[in-house]
Amino acid sequence: MVRYKKLGLVLGAVAMLALLPAKADAQFIRYSPIFWSFDVNAGIELPMSDLSDVAKPGFTVGAGWSYFLNPRLALTARGGVGFLSGESNALFNFEGGVAPDLTLFHYTAGIEGHLADPMGDLLATINVGAGGATFNSDLFVLEDVDCSGPACIDSPGASTTSTGFDQTYFALQGGLTLGYNFSRSGTNNVPVVTLFISGNAHLIFGDEDHTRILAAGGSTSPWSTMFTIPITAGLRFNIP
Image: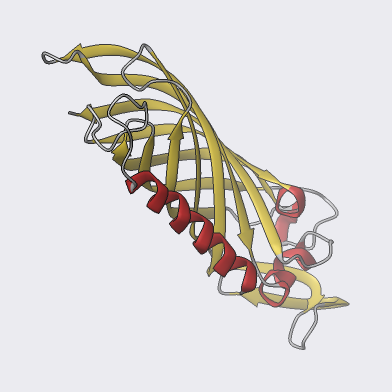
């Protein structure tokens, strides 16, 4: 809980600094030519570390919203859903040797910093946020495994049926976006449409008690953290 409180203090401090008065000729002024923006994106989501033992990369779609505090800093809210295919391995205890498909929902809020002038031709941003991640899967069966006790154990001839991996966890997110502003409008020549590519990292704080049944099926140890990297391309729409 201490580290979560520290994260909240850091995000709050950055947002407060953005609201402080600035000199009239300074780059970081309160007014921004872009009031807010939203984007849609699609791409591939890569499961990493322990999660990659039972899940393969899958398709992902998402959307985001940004409210500009000044020309270089914005508050953000983001959401996405990834469809991770179940990994297959003849040594797995999953019925048929195939892990269940996982649907993963991301939802975060945070801040976005612009490394390049948003009014220029190029878009370059970094973002950090915090929120949640929800996993969902269909029913699956483990063969030769008994998970009726506090731990899953090898038991030849036993069969364990799970109603699915359906859990929600706290998550941290950070990423980088690069793009090109190819459409402009208005007397201020404000960029309206941006084509971009983005890479994000999601660190998900799970629970070994929850993941033990997935780990048993994949013949590995339970894990308490999960890590995914969505890589996407999309369109961003700015509202002056």
